Length: 137
Length: 137
DNA sequence: GTTTAATAGGGTTAAAATAGTCCTATTTAA
DNA sequence: TTAAATAGGACTATTTTAACCCTATTAAAC
Ligand code: SF4
Ligand code: SF4
Image: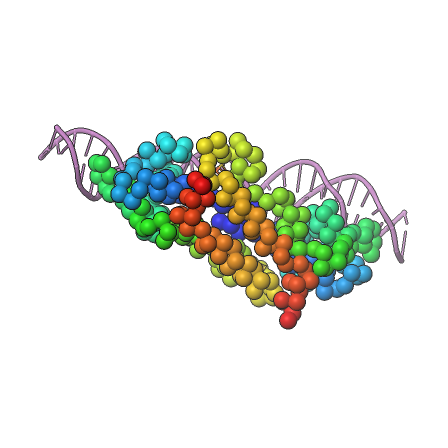
């Protein structure tokens, strides 16, 4: 259906939330979940993914939480998608060739792959910085 | 995961198959399924969707089957996606607002919608005609 | 007219992906 | 030492996608 996952949207909202709070401010998952309106448990998973990708940084222990891990003009929507959903696979053969029964005779692969790259380029064209400008401006 | 459905790929392959056979030639689902390598039953559903959208035309009864319903430069990949998967919804609120618990406070909707339109434009930029040229050429 | 090969389509089941929950360990400020 | 947070494994539920089954309808061929 070509729809983004909820987890991705959780992550994107979380990052823009962190961004409005500034680089220094440490924010707990609880605060974000309350403010944005998400399930705390699930958002927590998204944050862990973002942390692994270096997009968010974490502080453990009491008074801990999350901060941005990079400058907002160095993180694109594509980076967030990659962190949360893993490498994009517009077609199932992208995951593994044997996921498609007609792999060896398929003539669409080339087109599908360039299509995927174009979609990725669209996501990569928006940084968190420009997204915030678009939202606020 | 931003992946196209199998049904969509079935449909796209079927249309390009019909296109190589020319506008006049009537082709059965059985032939297409055998030639392309798909499940006959499932491809049949895809063809029914394509027919409803006017992309394919059907002939019933013995010696029946499917033909292209439009010229190959008048059908785009986006048309096929629309016929088979219905209206695109990059975000769940596109289906229905109450599918998203933070709909009223979400600031990403505008961006997500323009993103969806850009993706659609990518799909709409390729006609079956140009797809065939890309494949063969 | 009867048979036969095809589309049309409803309804059900199976499989896979996504979403959400639960529980425990670890970290660190107070 | 306690408490508040992240880290993450494991499990369950829900939703979506894929596949299958069965009957009706259509129309050519005989
Ligand atoms: S049909 Fe072609 S492009 Fe699609 S999954 Fe199979 S091999 Fe890949
Ligand atoms: S988070 Fe925003 S864009 Fe995404 S589904 Fe909810 S309302 Fe729509």
